[in-house]
Image (cartoon, rainbow, N blue to C red; front, top):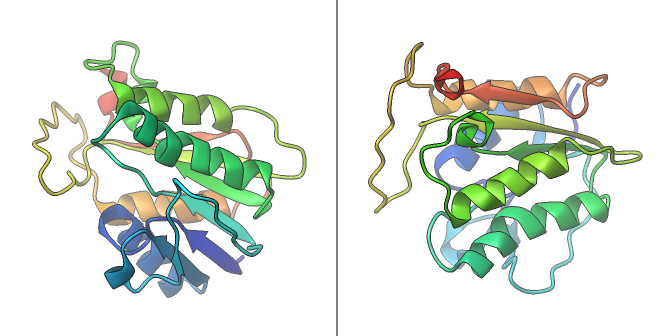
Length: 189
């Protein structure tokens, strides 16, 4: 299966790896960015009103890790929620954080809260829309963010491993409400 897919935040880091992998596998990929210099197909500031066309699938990858809690909520949760509610695509994969799957999360902050809400949204029924998620572990730390990865029993995952999980969910038509952790088993600790 392939078709048109929008990867939000698809011009840098994990989003770029996902977009590149999907292109290699035959998807026609479009990207968003809030940076004019990023060469994205759509320049989108999720803090403002935006219009996007319809796609066969959307990967809700765009996220911010620092800033005000309100801004993080807007970009990390409310924008994906709007994409789902406006039925921009019948097939959605949200990018979470595997810490939201942990029984004993080490740190609960504004970023964690936005991803926990996105997990809840993923697990709801959305008539006419398949919604799944991939929950990466310590894959890439954003520039300027010091990250302590912690133990990963099966090794640190690569961006390509996350991208492969995204493609699996996009191309598996009978799966919805599923979360695939790609964190080297970290969420089990």
